[in-house]
Image 1: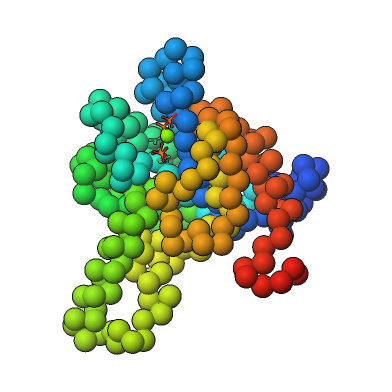
Image 2: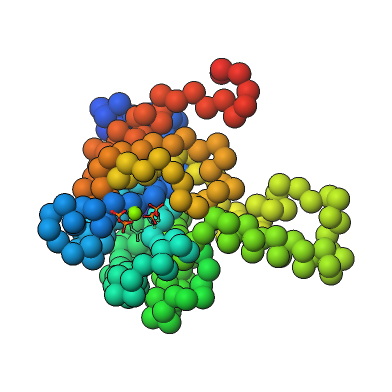
Length: 253
Ligand code: IPE
Ligand code: IPE
Ligand code: MG
């Protein structure tokens, strides 16, 4: 049972949204924290700090809209190229977020998941993430999934390794490998593919995010930086999504 009050159909309609035209899974590349701060003469880490506020707002809005899943790109496997002080700050911000949001996650009835390689993450982050995963397991609301130390190519390499091990052990016939065999070995096993991919801060690239899963995602990019992304921006993305003709290779429906 989800505890957060979801918007009624009338409330959705008043904003030009329709329940059956909402995406099931929204994925977000939360970019532009550093630029947002630098434009204001602030250190980059201030942008990350302010970005957490956007996360809180958008998580609750997506839950109230009744979406099935929200996946947020928090740290890529390539972000380790950044200076140690920024990475340390991001790690402590993540730990703090997971601790502070646990009660909100429970209040809103969300389930919590994390995708990405665990190695390299601080023991504190891993401990707090696991606690939140465990305590939210029985919830029935939206799934909140954080992509941390995540890389799409690394994920595919890990899946290939798992497939190869199954082949070597005689559990899998290489000639019979299907797309589902690959999907079920990705970090996102059991999750639906994103329907809508939002990127903030204007860049027209996917930056190694969910490469396999976004094959038919609708892409929506805004110039706004993540710390200034709010409900009206989300609604604009959802309205645009509703107007798209998703053909999946077929003909206009
Ligand atoms: C996104 O903001 C957050 C992370 C990648 C951790 P950036 O830190 O990439 O901000 P810009 O792109 O430099 O402005
Ligand atoms: C993508 O943003 C990663 C996250 C938002 C966590 P980046 O800032 O790392 O992407 P590039 O380097 O501009 O492609
Ligand atoms: Mg960036």
